[in-house]
Image 1 (spheres, one colour):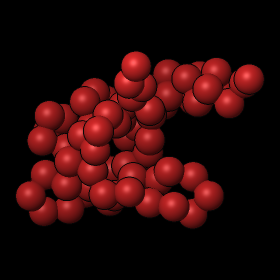
Image 2 (cartoon, helix red, strand yellow):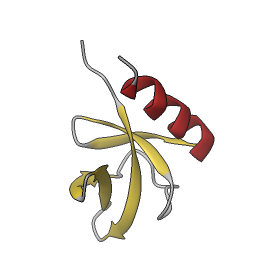
Image 3 (cartoon, one colour):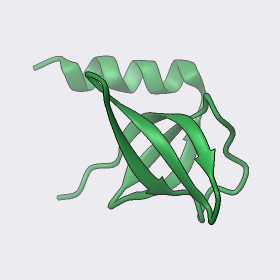
Image 4 (cartoon, helix red, strand yellow):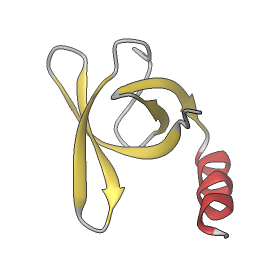
Length: 70
């Protein structure tokens, strides 16, 4: 099973790429080719290095809280 994970876009870059915040000071470079509408500060669902959808901030935070529960 694969799981998409909500991450916050820190910086949009050339060639449909962006840096996202993975938490704990770690960033990841992802592709935004499937989400051309994304802006810095948005939350996106990331799967296999690609942003596959843009989320509202409240949706992203709710998902992150659920994922942190064990």
